[in-house]
Image (cartoon, rainbow, N blue to C red; front, side, top):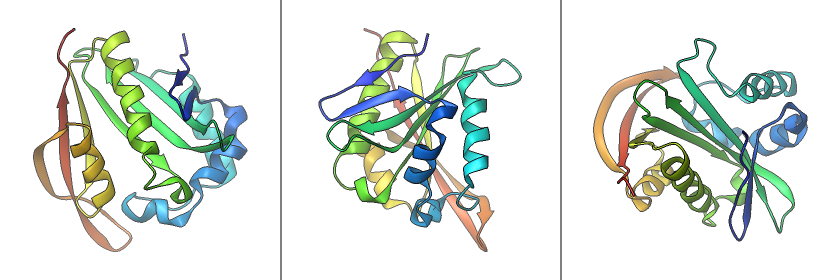
Length: 178
């Protein structure tokens, strides 16, 4: 079952290929890709990605994929997306998100993350959530800390893209059983 998550300002709707144009409009800003390997995807690439994500399961069947389009209720437009992978063998989860720069620094990522974390704890018995963050991405580092994540480790030269080496922090949030 695909679940819609709502807060006062946001509505997180499971991704659909039919969102492709709105989704692409939200995530085509080059600034989003500063700390992400790859360049701005084409509309065709976004459509293919959303079609793959609609399946809600990895091709090998080992992970549950939960992907939401973030809609602002007042703005009535797609602002970004939130992504979760749950390893079925351990129930451990990892998260990622993208938010259009127009909507950054307004608490939307925090609000969306709170919805997702509560949903994972309540509906999927997730014991822990991890986030991998480029060490240069100060906004995402601050978001993880504000959400209660703790830095678990540092990975030197975790990736190389756009002509530079990228170090990463791995952040961990332990979920207390209710």
